[in-house]
Length: 174
Image (cartoon, rainbow, N blue to C red; front, side, top):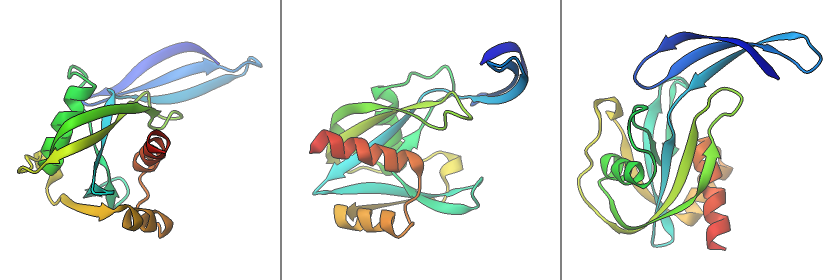
């Protein structure tokens, strides 16, 4: 697919929405809408053969969602380990003595440029969360691995980044 032209439709400090006119391999025209977002971090807080998860209301879905810690900064914020540590402390209050990069995911490659670095956090120390205003009502809880997997089977845990990150965790720890 070839980009013929591109125009910015919307921009704020967290994302840019653009519309691209494209040409498909057979020469026919196409139109693609792309959401540009900065790299995110997903943190797997692991201790005692279980995971610390956060639950929050996800407005686009109209329901609450249990997830691993996730987040990003505006486009000018540094990605990577610094972001992972900041998100972990912000959402859970936990600090990690060990942070291991497990890999990178494409969040929704048919819609957005956003990718996500997945980190395993170990050696956890409790502290007070420092949540953003948009994280009002966020809950945090530790789940055993058996409870976590039951939540997946029962459709309670459905966040794609959390599920993909768990696959990376299994491959890294098997």
